[in-house]
Length: 171
Figure: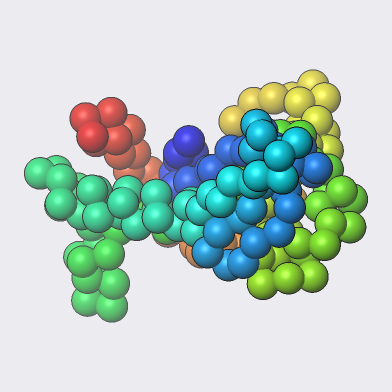
């Protein structure tokens, strides 16, 4: 998924419906998860979700920069010339894993550690959904609370007023 906010930028979300017991171990490149044939001792190696989100982010950036309308969203200021007007960031969403479960899992003591600053976990999603104000501003405020906004950087007010929704639709 891609979330766009004119005030924050673009956020690439890699969503995983894993349970905490699905995760076995891994490293910074791959995660080993239980397979359908776990009773045979088999596991499946998948790309680490952080790496997977990063790969999508680079693909999004490169696609936007190569698009025929890229001049509308590329910075012309000398300091940032050739870069997108909007910052890009990533996060991994675990729909079935709580913060406590993730933090107590052995993977957090390994090279496959999943950064809390780049995750949105089940309990945080539940908090957001239980909030009566589910507006765009409430979602953006939740991103700020989760420190995901710090991954974006700062978008100037002039850039925040330019919305590339039509461009994104065309891509």
